[in-house]
Length: 103
Image (cartoon, rainbow, N blue to C red):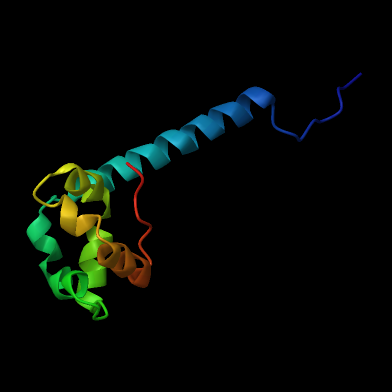
């Protein structure tokens, strides 16, 4: 007597697939984070928006999104902290659609 065909994947196969996806995603994030060179000077297009109430430029927003993985380091740097944690810096981040980090 032949066994009926079971088309549903086994729990082990599902767990293995989930682990593979998670490993792939974390490796992809690591590559993106490694590709960014943290340099506060990259945010110089944002300086006028941070030090005044002017709107951030498209270049500022682009650079802010690029430097997003570095923001916690800038926040912890005593030389940069006053600029990065200012209300205007948070406003610029919101305007650019960049979530302000919790470090």
